[in-house]
Image 1: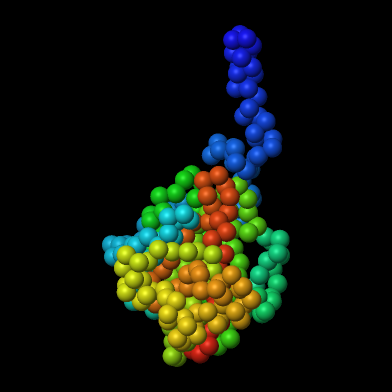
Image 2 (image 1 turned 180 degrees about the vertical axis):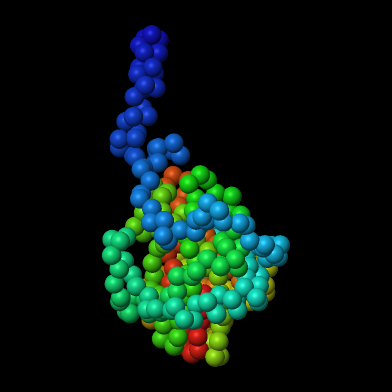
Length: 284
């Protein structure tokens, strides 16, 4: 009987892992079994030429506070300084064009019911390269990381971007593994235009007054309508219950989040939207 049990245990040790991988591939996947890397469009990546010299960048002067650990979401105060913000506005203005969406990771088309804004793919000036370097240095990411070329987006009254994932057309941890969103400007008496993560529940009780300067608190949303009523306009039934997180537009500040768990699963909590601008102009 003992020998039989020992033999059965040996068989289970040999076959348990292949069987679990067959029936539960998502659970058993490891860092060493990534799917093949998708083909990269290097024209959209911030890759320096062979003879490019390093720009003279200012020392980092931003503050960071963790809003969520799973997924990791970090709020960055003062990520862009005044000179950088003005520079981004100046180089964006002549090259703004209507924003597009894609359904298959390659072809693009316009659909103002989903995304109504203007976008500019920025030239890589020294100031832009310093912002790229700052974003990359913050992350400490794995191999095969490239920063995408920076884009600015401008939203005028009525402009919005409906709920979406940054990772929706990727799998197994490839693609846009992390995202930075920084606010550049809030002009002409901006109203509305917050960025909503309806599935991202955060713990802010430890410093609620400070957090309520940066995100919409429930009592504020009920009072001014900027948060909850806008969520309903975008058809977000879950967000309409008052849960989730909506970031206010604070020029110079930024939010960083990670799109994939360690097993390659995309985080549902990173589903987000740019709520409609009611008045003025928002640039991010």
